[in-house]
Image 1 (cartoon, helix red, strand yellow):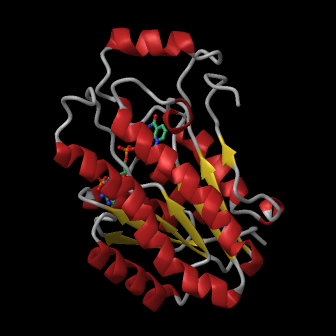
Image 2: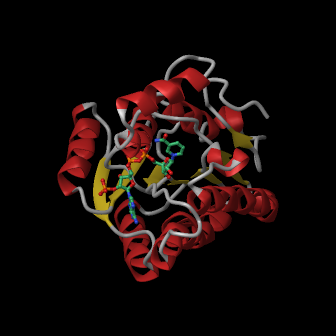
Length: 249
Ligand code: NAP
């Protein structure tokens, strides 16, 4: 029997990139997957179709994770359809760079709203059912920049570092209820998020990575799948960083 058979997973930002790969990996492991997205409905539909084609179960849900009312409707719809939520992957996110002195206040607020508030809204609504059933797996997608900091990306680094603190503190709160909370802090991954780099910037960045290449979304999904598996039952409050050796902690 697949290891996540009978479980229900919510993956935010699952229409593209890392979230898409996570949705496919959890579905391949047997979970029914709620595929959340912000704007790209066709991409989300393609993820659902791919899961169905492989014999799995999935449905797409549009919701901006930064909006508490949209998140409430989203989580209620998932619980209404699938009856419960066992796994939550807080992955939705965007990148925006700029020196601290010049980034608009609205950009700072949006960064915190999507990455931090979004994880808070989704998690607090999934927790009551997890606590009742005394089982849950929560994985927050942070970033190596949340560990080391990145110049020109103070807002992004602060939001991702915030997710690490959120992970560590929540893990302590809910461990007695049989729920694990971990963070994955990827290095540089080949997704749309990094399409804005020039070819020279890509070469420069690649030169800094001991593995000599960007990671793939599937390599991150494999780590998330492991953290959601029965084998990871004693791992909580941890940050795993698949990054090709760019950062060692
Ligand atoms: P991506 O390819 O740009 O995909 C972003 C996903 O998030 C899309 O599915 C998008 O939906 C969704 N999304 C964005 N804002 C949202 C919102 N407010 N509400 C709901 N969904 C939203 O990005 P990615 O590279 O896969 O990144 C995924 C996560 O990994 C992010 O949290 C990112 O910070 C983190 N990360 C990425 C890297 C990297 O190098 N790529 C490294 C470390 C950490 P639509 O398709 O509808 O727009």
